[in-house]
Image 1: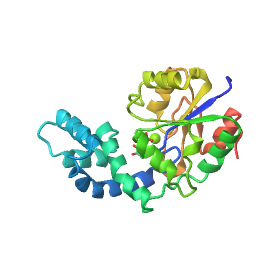
Image 2: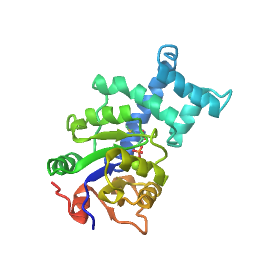
Image 3: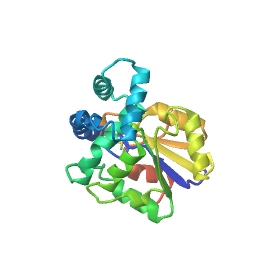
Image 4: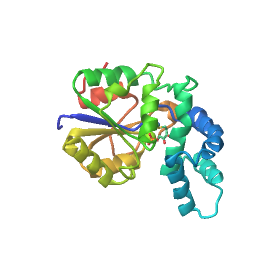
Amino acid sequence: MTAIRLALLDIEGTTLPVSFVHDVLFPYAAEALPGLLDTREEDPKVNVALEDIEREFPGSSPLDVLREWMAKDVKAAPLKTLQGLAWDGGFRDGTLHAKLYPDVAPVLKAWHDAGLRLAVYSSGSASAQRLLYGYTTEGDMTPLFEAFYDLDIGSKKVAESYAEIAGRAGVIAGEILFLSDIAAELEAARDAGYQICQLVRPQDGTQPAADMPHAADLHEVSSLFGLTGA
Ligand SMILES: CSCCC(=O)C(=O)COP(=O)(O)O
Ligand SMILES: [Mg+2]
């Protein structure tokens, strides 16, 4: 097995329970979104997101589109931008704290201390990723990561996105390990030449894919791939 130099991590269902996203983060955003849209005039990011929605759904109520996307957990870039802006105040004023899976902080610290490079690739916007890892119940974990990749790279379900990340990181694909709960994302990363492992978290009810390595937590990933784990 080729030595792994970089671990690329998904968030929801991999390092953070799906229930935290759906029961804590989404309701917070849903409550904050109407007020946020009122700032349209002042915030260019809000403006761009609303223009994207209008282009895709001409004449629709943006709030209705956003609510439907959230109900279906659609990973749409305008929604992810606006959710990130909505969460910003909540993380900064202490209302929100990311409660990661308990294995995540110790194992990521051990990997980082052992010299393994770490990066995030999530549908959540890069600024939301920084907030989430900046305000965890374990403290600020952002210094562990060298990069935060989001949908600006491209869809998580196409191989080209993973090739792009490998190029930006300057690491050959075979030396990158991608960790996610979603089989289609892992297949795309494998098509790009990455090593992969599916996180099958019992709490999330993830179904193991037939033809790929899987692990119940990051300790098991360490054992499977010969990484230094806590
Ligand atoms: C800062 S990410 C918050 C969770 C979220 O909104 C999301 O879409 C996560 O998707 P992932 O690609 O990490 O499964
Ligand atoms: Mg996920």
